[in-house]
Length: 332
Image (cartoon, rainbow, N blue to C red; front, top):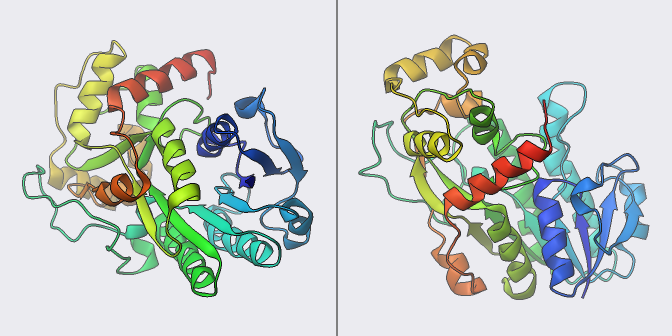
């Protein structure tokens, strides 16, 4: 299969591209002219210059392509977060239009579990009563509750419409992706902080963490075996934030935190000022800190059964791999 990957020079996209090449796929990447290439160095791929936000640049890149993996979105730029968030929806619409106008048969959108929205539970100090979410959970509430999640939700609606119109399109939803190559320190920010000696206090809440190699394997399987119109959660282990902080500190040879920020105090800090998040060095974005005590847990049963995925790698191995990459590729 001739496959086009958008976002191939980024963290997740580079691992997906490598997995597809190693599986024998004929891979073309869509990239901007100034995209850094170190994460895909040495890979034998065809190269197309273009931008998901520039529809006129896409037809040539999509020519002769049978399968698309759409991973690109604007990560940096001027004008604040609004244009970056809008790029998720606009870029997805543009690539879907290009796909339907050419010979593309399969289209996999790499979304996020954030698109499922915030769990329907009251904040709690522990995870004893938590029920993991599955693919049937849908976004509820205003966009302001989690702007990034809402942007992903909106993009998924475009994929669903294209599927109903006949394109073999589906969505995968990675959890918090851990591993080497996250130069923007998006999902590996906790590891980067602790590696640099900044160990945050423990806080209530929880996340699902997944190795980037498992995400790449899931995307490859979805391209081959996923059902059009479906979504698949690509997750790993459900872990409390306190556990992740303590475990990461021990792995990296740092002293684990001795104190825990109470739930009420955490949420109060979030209400006072987003700047306090940076001063406290907490491993979550401001909008998630406002959801302290919520456990973003997920089940991966559907993906494992339908895509034939292997059991996930443990967080510890992924975290060590991430830290090793940061040691050799310092980012500030």
